[in-house]
Amino acid sequence: QVQLVESGGGLVQAGGSLRLSCAASGGGFSSYTVGWFRQAPGKEREFVGAMTRSGGRTYYGDSVKGRFTISRNNAKNTVSLQMNTLKPEDTAVYYCAAGTFLYSDYAIGERYAYWGQGTQVTVSS
Image (cartoon, rainbow, N blue to C red; front, side, top):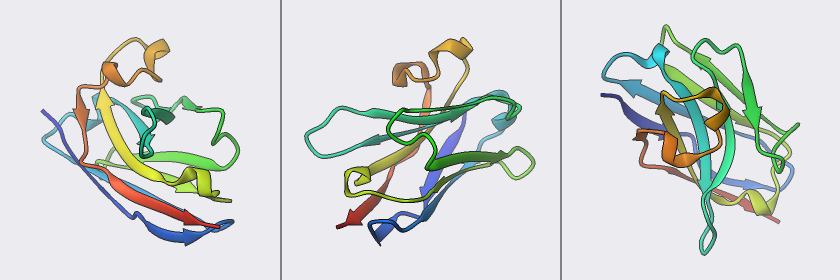
């Protein structure tokens, strides 16, 4: 079983950057696909990005493509989300998640077995 803890959220002005981190404990981190999701008030959960176990493949949601970058360090059991050129519409609670499933299901939140508690990101205009 994996426990995930996000950090790095906060308040930033539009156009700025933030880097979120997710620390995993419990073992087996390198065997999981890791993903980032977000949820804004009154909206459905949205896929942000995912990275395969070895880091060989990354996937991004259309709304963040070209602005956000996922990286992972399996030796340190961490995954990061670098967010650049932030927009007010990026405001949400951001969650990291981990799971094992068919690679094609990376954008489906229900496929992830483990979730962090979330970290708030607020982008002011």
